Image (tube, rainbow, N blue to C red; front, side):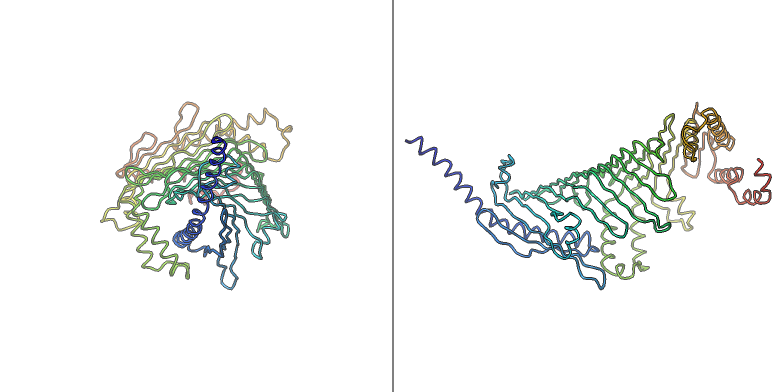
Length: 504
């Protein structure tokens, strides 16, 4: 008998605790909702004042195990236009153990589980029509007792069409989590397909854009000055663009990555882009790579610039679209102060990988605080530029690959191209380009590659192993350009003897 009573008492006690917890957390949910709306409006006003967006709580009905709420998002329209209002309904299950989480196997206690969805009104009616009557925007959000939040944002398949232009997107989903202090944000999302058709303003012909398998991710932590440290990325399986009068271009396996970190002398940021395959009119060009970096950016000065822009954006700049002389002077002074930390800018790598070779270039620039005695733009530029290095290397096989691609895009069928004639053409063009580069001394031979190197510091230049002053290098560059027919004198001479030039 005692065992039976105990078996009944324990579940009843658990239910009683859960109900009591639900009643208690229900009283806190409204406070958290109100606090969250206040934080959202503060953030929108500080970081995106030009959007003219505000959030308001229209009403809330509290129950024992759940509550319902309605929120309104208002976006100020242009002058003379009515504002756009979007209304969301929200069913809030009280914690500590919302039934929907228990059913999903999530046993950790939470304050509330939100289920929100866009409500249909005059502003949202086009979205509902594009979604075929389904709810276009919805999601779920778990509110934890330590004020952490995590959830998912979903959009339905949407299709818009008007006057021959159209947009079709597949369902999309974004998972996210936000720390209690709102400084640690993680997100990842995916959309399988998007197709866009619009008219080119010049030709009036349709442009087609096709996107497949878009993925985004980010893991950011805000530091004391409000900068979001950490990585973010975006990737695409395929991006295809077909425009009138231009060959069809497709980018496959494209990845973009960004990382902001706290370095020894300030903020460091790197940006990297990869294209696994670039195809033009179905012909593979090769893979592309772009790496850039910014280092030693003083975050105190960057914060001042950010605040100045925000201040000006909320005042006179928003009315006239232009800075006053005083504002320009203030911003100029702040940008010059960035040079105090000796920032470094670099194109770490820009490369093209073809079927038979690689072409690669890199450039690095070290900046410094300008000399107080510098007055003219030339003196200031020399004073600011502490050093510059650049390197270029092109495999000769890349030249042949590019020539072969041009031949394939010349309008002939692939089966109609004579491989022997094509080989002769690519060899001839490779020899011609290589000979010009070597004869002009802009490049030196490095095995089966053409290479070029430049180093500048203290008004001295080392170019392809030769030491010279900056004035000597400029004279060399101008002379070489004229010798290659790029100068004004050469262009004039070409106009005087067009027939002889044509024969050659």
